[in-house]
Length: 71
Image (cartoon, rainbow, N blue to C red; front, side, top):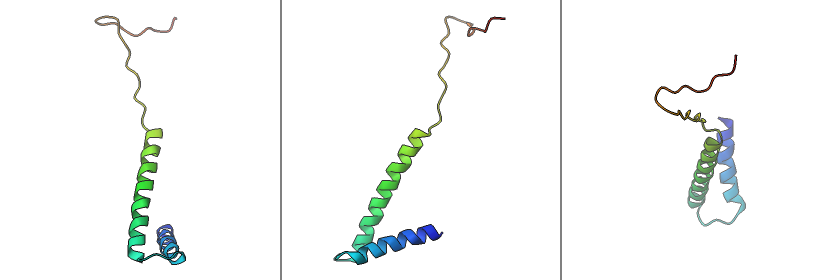
């Protein structure tokens, strides 16, 4: 919870550092940029850690079995 409060304070303090015409529009722009940033990061992270589907065994005819290890 404290991290979220800190993030909000950073955005509001950022608007105080610069000469912005309206704090509300500044927060809207920062919110939009944050949503885009974390959406792209989340998509990239999801793609990197996606579940891998094992490749299907290609059979060579009806009832064919995959090769077994020699006894």
